[in-house]
Image (cartoon, rainbow, N blue to C red; front, side, top):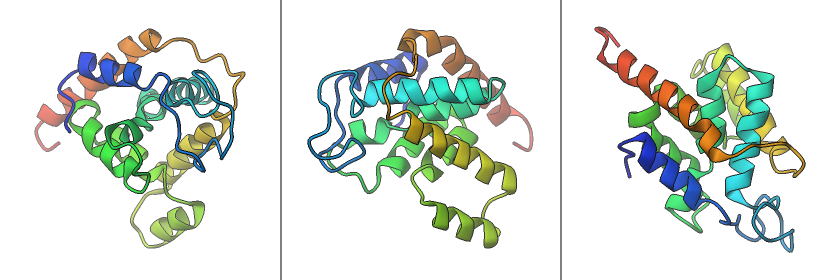
Length: 173
């Protein structure tokens, strides 16, 4: 699936409301249920993005990566193995390469990231960003973070999308 616009992305993000992580997934078996609980993908995405906004207020792409990192689970429910790749491929045309790379890499374990970095596959700044995203992802599983509402993110999504579109059309980009 390839997202064609911010409205389509917003609809998809709204569709995450009440969607639960699979049993045995991040919320764990028998974890709290119901919308807004730790396993609620919509609230988790909002909490992750809000934590990233506090940690890196100027890095809109990192914040947006936190907001969209759960989309793969909605696009292919029950298939947790490729959710990061699926989400990255869906958001790349709309939100750009950096957001897609962050979404793709957030699912890797710390050892995988160290091997990638040591093997020359990623730069230090990217690895730091991925680790920041992973930390926010983990912290975003816990209720109590003032996450706001999805509509608050529309302007940020539009900004990141506009930047991605502009950089794509520049010569040499």
